[in-house]
Amino acid sequence: MLELKNISVKAGDFSLKSVSFGVQEGDYFILLGESGAGKSILLETIAGLIPPDSGSIFLDGRDITPLKIQDRGIGLVFQDHAVFPHMTVGENLSYSLHGKKILKKIKNEKVIKIAAQLSISGLLSRKPSTLSGGELQRVSLARSLIQQPRILLLDEPLASLDSRIKSELRTLLRKIHREGQTILHVTHDYEEALSLGNRIAVIHDGAIIQSGAPEEVFRNPRSEFIAHFVGVRNFFRARLTTVNNQTTGLVDEHVPIRLVADETMKTGFILIRGEDILLSNGPIESSAVNNFEGTITEIVPTVNGIDVKADAGIPFQARITRESLDKLELHEGKKIWLHFKATAVKFIPA
Image 1 (tube, one colour):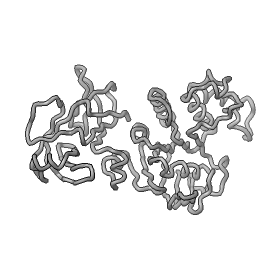
Image 2 (tube, rainbow, N blue to C red; image 1 turned 60 degrees about the horizontal axis):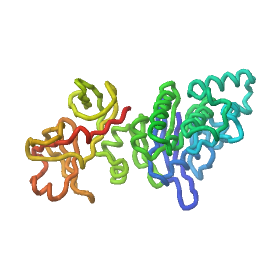
Image 3 (cartoon, rainbow, N blue to C red; image 1 turned 90 degrees about the horizontal axis):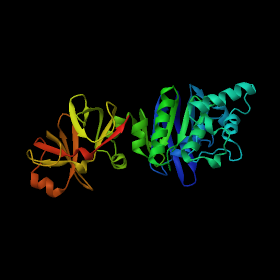
Image 4 (tube, one colour; image 1 turned 180 degrees about the horizontal axis):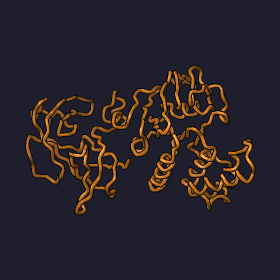
């Protein structure tokens, strides 16, 4: 659907370096990277606000590189909303259809319909200055979606919002995606990426350094930078079940991990910090409710300690000190016990 081929852009001291990737129809594609990695510049280049120095952008097989933003069939939602402050919400939405040969009656119907879909019908007569951050973001989304774009570009749409509003907007974005909207969403937040995306590309210093499904990128980082950036060592897709007020995440349908979570019978991702996994040479008495016996598959020294990888039905990775490594006399092929508390397990709904 959307394909970038060798896009390069020079912007002051920064440059995008021959960026290539594709977004398929129906994808919720996440572009993940630190601040200053080039995410927003790339998004604005796709939208047509910044011309590339070289390379091409295709949408549905058509080269849109030379086209103006209004002719590309692309919707763009900025982080700072960028709504017209002198117009009401209704006028902002209606203005998005400016220049299109649409009867006024049809235009009004479209405004009413999109406002209902995004739960902002009660805001149509209000000015942007009277709205909260979450309301403004809904208006920005509505203003782009009313144009029925082939692909919707989102530039850090959940930044600077409190956790409750973020949760509401994530739910809304999932709904928009389920209804058939293809989305390209840039963020620096890996939890946001996990909870929304079905495809992820990591951008660093103006270049795409890894892409794929969330499981592939987060469980098998291809570089030290990605491993450090995402900060995830133990990452598993799981299905939650709750029995007698005890919540368990079932990984690969056969490995149960106890955790604390409000979600019931939902799927998502389990995350466990390597630092929260205790290793021992045998069973121990402790408050940890998750206890697994496994076999050490790899021992990797890092700048922050020693990473011990073990197969216990699923691949775990613990981070320990050099002193612990020597004390436990660990080596590849040795049997080892892994222990961690339910409170050490984080669940992110998919």
